[in-house]
Each structure stands twice: as C-alpha cells, then as structure tokens.
Image 1 (cartoon, one colour):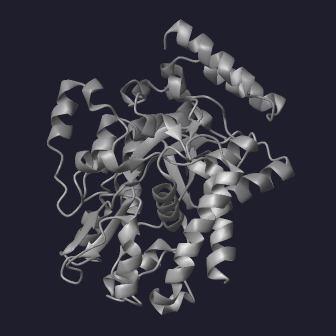
Image 2 (cartoon, helix red, strand yellow):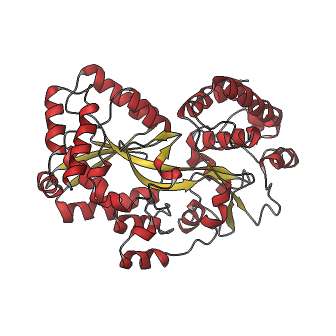
Image 3 (spheres, rainbow, N blue to C red):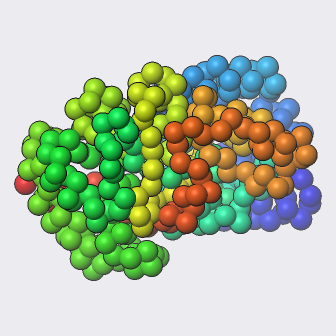
Length: 406
C-alpha cells in the first residue's frame, strides 16, 4: 500500500473509534499501519465467523464448495458461516454491545440498506477498510448503484459484493399476457382472482418501494427520508393494495412469510407471479428444477429497484485481519466470475470489467449467457435507485398494520 493511502486510511479509522475499547482501538491502529503482506501473514490459519442469509441453496453451495476450500488452500483460513440477517443480526450485535463483549462471536457480515444504517447508528462496524484491499482497485466505484447503499455513501465501511435488480417471474405457458407496467397490475389481479400475492419480507418490501416510486415519480423520493412524502405515497400504495386484496391469493387473509414460500406457491401453480431481487434468479431456479423451463423474468415499466449487497466487519471482530483477507478474495476476479455464472449463483458483478487484466476481461466477456432472465443492459434504463433506509423500515411496519391486519 502506498504511504499516502495508508495515512488517509489510518486517519479515517481513528475518527471512528469512539465505540471501541482501548484494546480494540490499538488493534485497529496496528492493522491500519500494516502492509498487505503483513496482514496476510497475520491472517494465516485463522478462523473467520461470518453471518449471512442462507435462504438459497445455490448461494450456500457456492460458499461451501467454492469459497471455503479456496480460502483454506490459499491462506489456511477456516470460514465458519452462520445464518442471520436484518433484525436478527442487529439484535445479536445489540446483545453483545449491552453485554460489553469485546471479542464478538461474528467477524464479518453480509448486509445492505437498513441493516447498514442500523449498524452505523450503533457504531458497531469496524470502520473504513476498503482502501486496504488490493482488489478494491477493480471495484466499479463510479457506478452510483454500487457506491450508494440506500442513498447512503458506502464510505469505505462496507465492500460491494454483488449487484442485482428486482424482476417479476411468470410462466409463459400459464400467463400469455403479462402486465407490462405497475398501472396494469391492478386490472391483471382483478381479472385473475386468487393468483397474485406479495411476500412479507425483503423482496416484497422492495417490490412495494418500486411500486411507490412508480406512483410518486423517480425523482420525488430521492434523498433523505421525508415523512410527509412517505405518508402521502405509502397511503396511496396501501389504498391500491387494499382495494385489490379480495382478489389476492387466499383473498388477502394471509401473505407468504418468506420468498421461498412465494417461489414454492409459484412452482406449484397456485399463483402466477413470483419475484426476485436477483434478475438472473429465474435461470438458476430452472436449473435447480424448482421452476418450469418456461418460466421467464422481466422488469415492468417504469422500472424496479436495482441495488448492491455488501460485506462488512464488526467492531468487535476477533480476527479482522482474516476478515479482510476473506473480503478481498470475495471481490477478486476469480470469485466474482464464478459467482456470476447463472448455474452457480447468477449474481451481477461489482467489478468494472474495463479495469481487469486482459485474461479476466476475456473470461467475463464469455460468461455463460442468460437464458430466461432479462438482458442486464436492456433493463438498465428501468433501474431505480434505492430509497433511504427509513422507507424500508417503515414499510415493514406499516404494511403489517395498514394491509395485513386490516
């Protein structure tokens, strides 16, 4: 690492030390002053505990069969993965903060949006670290869908891992004509009673945000959370959904609690649409045998939310140096290429292909093509920026009060 970069990074870390013990502060300062070779040596043969969502078999297989063996063979690092996201993850961190636990059980986490916001509010993140990673040079930081997480600057405190866009999934054998815009959905739902519903979880809330942006206009909800605008457009949205609720699956008396349940209802033929935050997921669900080969994905007008997901390190990580090594590997051209294959995960890369060495440019140029997923370049002009995290937090609560419980 160049000396100038090292000084800047060291200063940034010093600015974020208020929640740390003296021991942890010294540990961070020492880590910030190391060369990458010294970090690598210190990380050798350590264990790293990672908490992440484990709701997709292909993602779990990628981590178990590709990432873990690579880390073990390259660096001797043992990656242990536990299941957790969102409020469960935040609850875990809060519990350790209240207990004054200086050596936490979790080193690194898979997060974005409202979880990033909440962990920052708790001062529970390690601090700025992305400039220390050698593979950071390849990250597409000029892309606002990568450098902004729910309208928040990433600010070096989390590292982009993948980039996706919300897509609608249908079966062309069962649905000949799909609603091509949010404004056409209402008529579709009325014409096809009992065949439409929304999952009451992250993807469902992202769908609601996309719908709210479609109602408000793309520019109206940009920037910091605005209570007046939220109340105005969320009420319009809930009014529309409540008008349609009698035509929903099970007449809107219940909603799928997980995306896996929504996918299964679609696969069983009980509903005609499911959704995914990963525009490529339809291809890997067909390969898994869950969806029929005639399933297809598309993005309705005027668009849906595109966002990135990130990796970060907790403030009380036991082995932050080893977590840095893991994250650096996960954003390497090798790991990103493997993850981008539809048969593996189909996750969009966060790398700027033009910055890669010639060998990797060539390999990314010949990555297996999408089959039933939309072409990414063709849907880019239908990509909405994420809203500020408070919109997501409020929608979770108000969808329950204003729709589910009414």
